[in-house]
Image 1 (cartoon, rainbow, N blue to C red):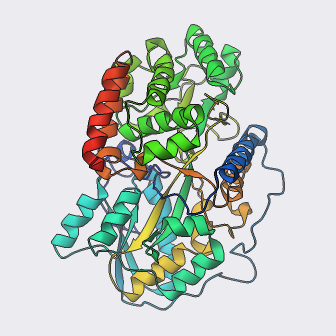
Image 2: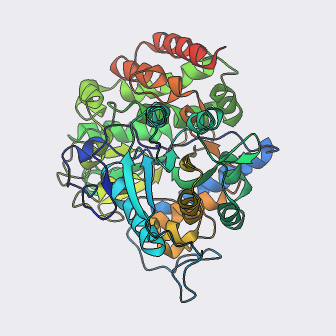
Image 3: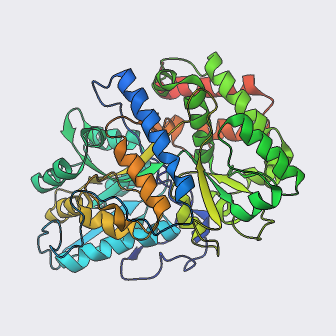
Length: 495
């Protein structure tokens, strides 16, 4: 996403409340990195086509500015919206008495919302489904489960390396004919390619994310007299004005290293461009490259100002993602910070405050650092780990508009399912984000860290996550950060 990356809560069947917001201690200490996931670039994509799609996607993302506060417009609709008088969009088998386990690194409200999807599956099939909270790195978690003879039936994987590893280790089962039919009906070839390894379809990209958004406290902006910035320079100017007004500009979730990779990726994509982005994602250029230096220098303009960060660098490094959101939208016009960066899934955490999305909590696209504003995507892919009828039925359901509709109605969720009726989303902000995602077709950039080996791009306290946390603590040491990033990358990539 990002996928999810911190602590987890105890597992529970979908009929319990253990996954509901506030039901378990520590719920706010973990969250979905929904947006994370990863891909290989779809074959045959032309650079100029990608550039045009990026421009269209960025323009579509800008619609959220005009959508805020208005839910009165008739939304655009997909081609096969579920829940209509025609009934369910997909037929599922009866699975009475069958018990399934589904593992993911989702916790708190994200887990609670997903269990509503699983509950719908239970009601329609007669199966009993238990959600199993996983830990990062998920490959290690699944490996221990499989070694112990108790793999989950289905896992949702937030990194491309995890999918490849699952196939390489012979854990993953190819999708069945029914799931493939839903994929062919509802997904663009680019999203299908993401779930394939060596030409064989193994996964269903169930959840996607737009990871190029900055959410802001409307009252704090109004009190300081600032407006949403469109460029990095404007963002720094707004940050200075907000700081002078007594409200730190940005709440940074530095305790969760994955958020820092997302900061870097957006700056790097906009400043260095998509071709360099692809090269760095594959480690075809080194992290000591001057383009990386430029991106870190830009980030240091923000991270290097203690007054810009809620709690300063030390406060940021001790702030986990859920808190970074909730502290931005509590306190009226004097919150802990005026802005928080992350994807569409931020709405899930805003819902845990009294702030209302579209009124108190507004959003703007990540500002352009270079010629164009960036748009980074992520996602979670569902993979069957057992050759069972139930596992394949669940993949079929997750590839359908029926499952996507249930989750979309909860908010904080985007589906790459192009057939989903956009009226399923709860507000215009979510609808416009979804519209932008679908409008991108096969031409989009995926989260860079999730394309990397997990040892570099997906492990807490190691690799890129740790190097960028060290950089946040000392933004003046750009050369040191580059050297550490390159050393860790070379080791992980083997080159």
